[in-house]
Image (cartoon, rainbow, N blue to C red; front, side, top):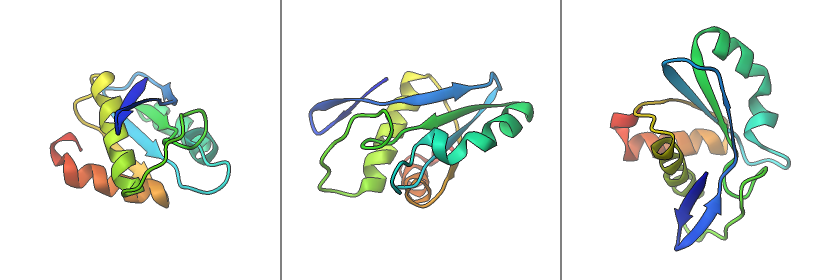
Length: 117
């Protein structure tokens, strides 16, 4: 999918698993090699088996997503990109789980769009 940020189109990579009525989005931390898959691959099967659709997002600058120079809050950037992704996937509400940077980004998303969580 594509996200727009500072007038630039970014390619955003994600893995989409399961067919559940409710969606869990997993947001990774910021360490070297961090990606949605690297951080959360062991969580996919239990969540899918529990009936959830699971999305593992590679935040901008990590994994297979495009990089961007960001002068503002990384958490706010990731929250805006996440909103773009769930909008494009036509998902009205999500459950969020994040570690480290992903935790901050989850809070930023929730503060900006509480009706989506």
